[in-house]
Length: 287
Image (cartoon, rainbow, N blue to C red; front, top):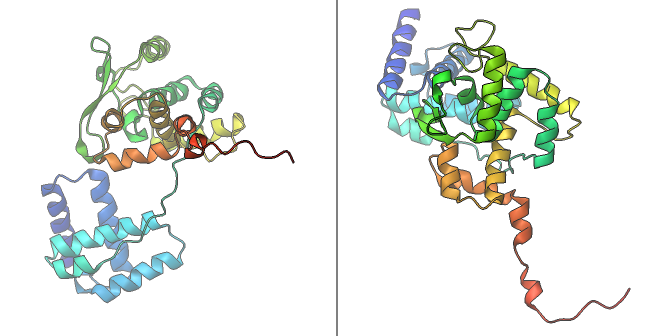
């Protein structure tokens, strides 16, 4: 049994490697199929669509969110459709509809309060960099000294989501902050190294520092590191930057992902004139 499962797992890993899927995705997919198999106590190739359906209901009963459940289902879709070659089963596996929630955004003065509340130099510089460039937290921690191109005033983002490279702008203000940070800390390779200089700071440590800073700043909103990325995109949109440019800066594959920021760009919304303003209906009578 263990040899069969091991061979099956290797085949799935090979299938993902051939398709150049990221290591994080591969790890998540393998874990999802492993947990699915463990739940029923059988090799996953012996389980049917009915087992998948039962497992999906089980995950929901445990209180998992739609996104977490969908990730598990995407893993099972890949396993059945690609590794086992059972496209008919894969196509039957449904994905839950994700709630179309507005992305959380900080106002510029709230971003300022947040950044001033971070006492640690490395954490504060990392947060400033994320807000100034719109990087994902995983992209920020992976930055190296060589990625900062002051000659061209850009930052090279390597192997972002979907393993895509891209450039983001390097403002004069950010460059000054990064140079001051470098003079104080002298990182050798990674821009934001961890306790072991050969490895970058962890995403988890940044998230912890973010929660502490939000509390210290007295922000009553749910603030994560990703909130800084949302705020970057929204503030650019409010400044009138073309949405296609913002899409490229964020590394979005589809413009629909970027367009949702139009729903929270308050300054832009305020500038839209209501059709009521064009009517000549007079003022309301005094109360």
